[in-house]
Length: 224
Image 1: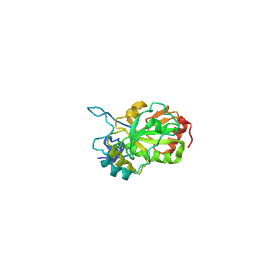
Image 2 (image 1 turned 30 degrees about the horizontal axis):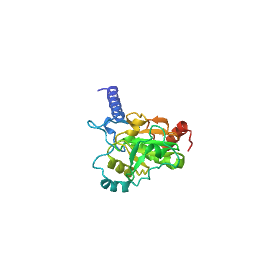
Image 3 (image 1 turned 60 degrees about the vertical axis):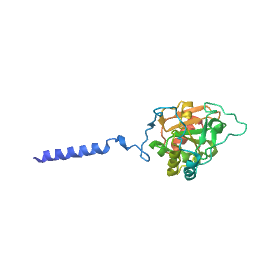
Image 4 (image 1 turned 180 degrees about the vertical axis):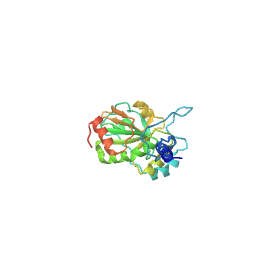
C-alpha cells in the first residue's frame, strides 16, 4: 500500500471516530443528565387522572417530607380576592399535605409557577436555578413549584436529592397546566400578574437565575 493510501485510510478512521463521538444518543436522557430540551408527557393509559398515588398516604410521606424540608406554601393575603384561571384550583401542599387554593395563595403579588416532574431531566437542571432566583427575588415574586405526576413521594425524594426547598403543590392530574393552557411538555414556567391573570406561559428550560430574571423583567415588568 502506498503512503498516500495509508494516510487516506488513517484520515477515514479519524473522521468516522469523530462522527461517532458527536452523534446524539437518544437513550442518554435521565435524571441528572444535561439536556435542555423539554420532555413530553401523557395521561395515564386508562381511568381518570389522579393527583397522587394511593400509596402516598400522610404516614408514608412523613419521612420524605422531613428529608425534603420544603418551605411553607404561600397563604392568601388578607383582603385580596383571587381572580384569574387558577382561582378555586385547590391542591395539596407538598411540604405538609395541607390544602392550597393556588389562585388565592398567589393573589395580590406577581408569581412564577414552575411545572415539573421528578423524572424530568431538564427540570432537575432548572430547579436549582429557580431556587436561586427565588432567593434573589424575595417578596417581589412568589415562586411556587407544581409537581405534574402522581408520584408525590418521588417528588419529595427528588427535591431532597437536589437540595431544593421551594414551596410546592402536588398536581398529578394536571389541573394547573389545564387552567393556564400549558403545552404537554416539561418544564413549563407560568408568569402571573398580581391580579391573577397569565402574563406568559414559557415551555422553555432555564439554566440559570439570570435567564429567569430576564423573563420576569420582560413579561411582568419586575426587576430583581
